[in-house]
Image 1: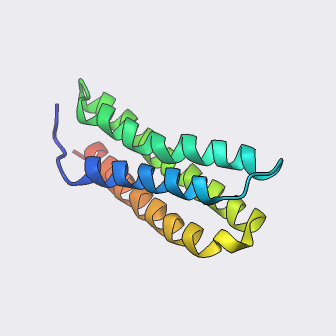
Image 2: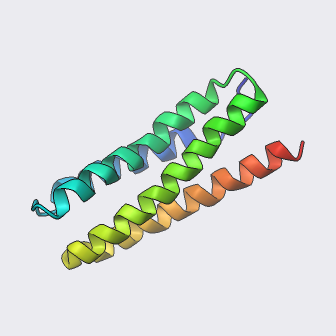
Length: 118
């Protein structure tokens, strides 16, 4: 039921890869390791859930899976904020990734709202 076909599959995959590469650069400590783990989980989950949404079996299923994408993007913003605080040297990159997570969140929110209003 692929009613949405933008560059979102590619965009969310690239974002996940950027998150992984960013995580590799963060200095590891007792504070940063759990933050990195959470960031990787939420940041890569956006693309995985979008792939599931692209193969949704119904509009209800599509809305649900896109809602998960939206929530994962929002959560990713949180972990980026925590990492920026824990590792001040990573603030610039974290801020750039935060901006992309925010845009993805807004995109998925907009799609969900449009689908619900159909």
